[in-house]
Image (tube, rainbow, N blue to C red; front, side, top):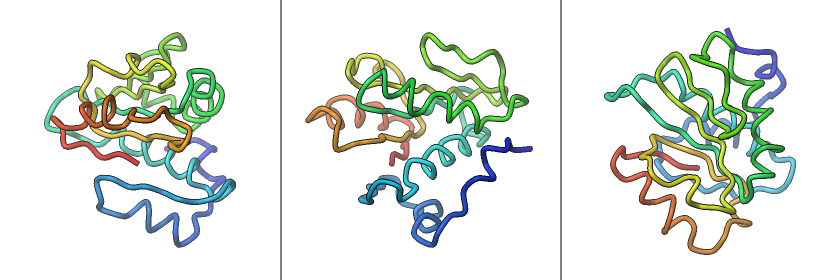
Length: 153
């Protein structure tokens, strides 16, 4: 059973193509109000119950700063996750959500890239990628994706 937050989006054909694309790496060039953020939030939440060959799948939702992450992604992602999916209360300090499926979603601000390092992720979203620090993807994100053949938008 999904939350009421899921009923607010009526995807158009381009959003549907993005959602169903089998590509591991997706770059979305679209203007404000195009729905890319809303679709990406839903996609990462939709991945949380997906079974993996390991017991601890990790996902991320990243924005250029911690303040943006807490303001633009944290409450909206929480609204999309059914309470029955939660293994414990979401950790507001580290912006992490642990599910009963064994998966964890981290909401990250990349003003301090070390917040993201140390784990191998199964997938994630880089929102506002044009505002990220130069070299952030190759230095920080790409190494986190290799061992689990992860996807990234």
